[in-house]
Length: 150
Image (cartoon, rainbow, N blue to C red):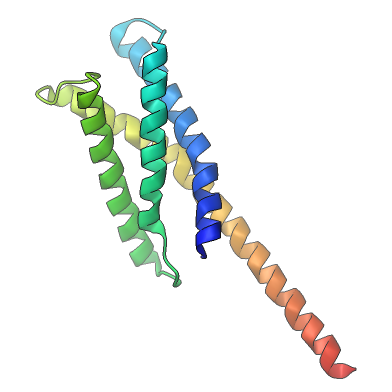
């Protein structure tokens, strides 16, 4: 995958990450704190966190074809990075206290929720990209066969 395709992938993922994060934040505040509204500053903080989480997708970038095992390891590393960033950002913005294991676990669960939304869509996007590239290769090989026969 070239860097241009990775940038497109990250652009698409950002909107899913941001939307999923807002949904997770609203659901968790309603379920655990009894209110359904979130402050505008929290939306901005989620936006910042979503941008940072999207940028960490560069961990998944490779110029070479990766094996399934290599890709799985990269996704695991990426998940650990995103979870760590989310936990420390949540503590920094006073959403949670690091001394409260339940609150830390809640953030990790929310990251899992967002990750579960992004991963299938990202894999689908990658599959579509692979299909497009395969089609282009077929077209080019057919075109070169046509030129050779003339």
